[in-house]
Image 1 (cartoon, one colour):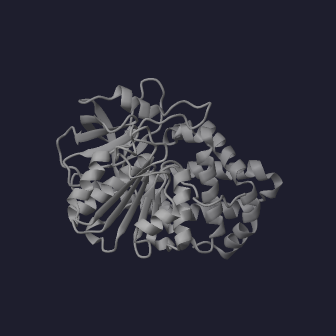
Image 2 (cartoon, helix red, strand yellow):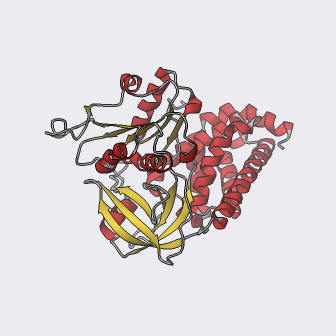
Image 3 (cartoon, rainbow, N blue to C red):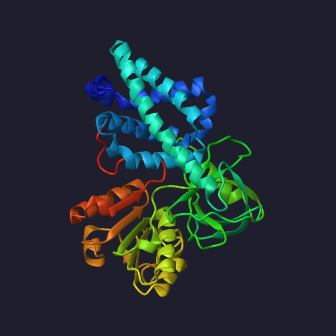
Length: 411
């Protein structure tokens, strides 16, 4: 347990840290990559370039300091981050590296205000949180290794099939090279792709599993990502997968991870799945798994896309309605092409709105799962709040650094 003195000091400095949080995290990454370049492989440099990781870390630090006297509030966030850490292969020996560079960054930014007493308190607080992460991550590693067909680290898979799903999305069907069993996964989880890029060393990438666990393969469905900023390159790994990986090629994969999941066997109340763009992948896995385990489950699936050229899984979404007696689907295009609406490729032209959710979903008692680009998710979250949907019935997943859906609290 943390000492009362440490809790008092951390709460006292929280406003000052919050006011300088992004400056501290930017300095932290600069220090760490210079002093410990070996850890750079764990970080997506595109997210570094846009500042997404710096903002996410700043938010996490402020949240921890704010709730330093009640860390139980943070356990859902701990689970999300622990799963991400395990997917990247982060181990206990990496935590002292982070801790020393974080303390150094705080000292660099706060200057004389970072007294020895403050540094000691922050060090104790960091060590307490690190122990929580290390314990949970060790448990996840053990769960992975002990599962039938499970493994830690990487395992070699072969691309059994490569299928274009739209103009921008391609699916890869992956089978173990050793022909051994596949461990089961929870619908909504992701696997980690380790690519030895021919030109640019880069970090591993997480891709949601887009099929249900009953299949003899893992399937990921990858969007060809455009640059996150005008002066940044297009998605390095997504482009390489689309252009450089073919059927028969080998890929190194980490085992399934992630906490944005659903247990299809225990679904009782209606489930509303709302997908924006490539956010359809974990939700499609959930829907197919629910239908497979419980054909009578009540599912309302909304897919939002730009138009018919970029919509992925149109056929699979249509098949869901045929397989499940109580499956309802609705497709929205916000930039339909000529003929998209007339030919019935979408049901509605426009965006997901509060009125649509009110009229089309059983919002008063359903569980909601949604995933997509940040503006899309902000809109869905606002709609659900307007409808009065309790937060405990709402689950969502970000692709990229974890950020808040509501207006940033650090401003």
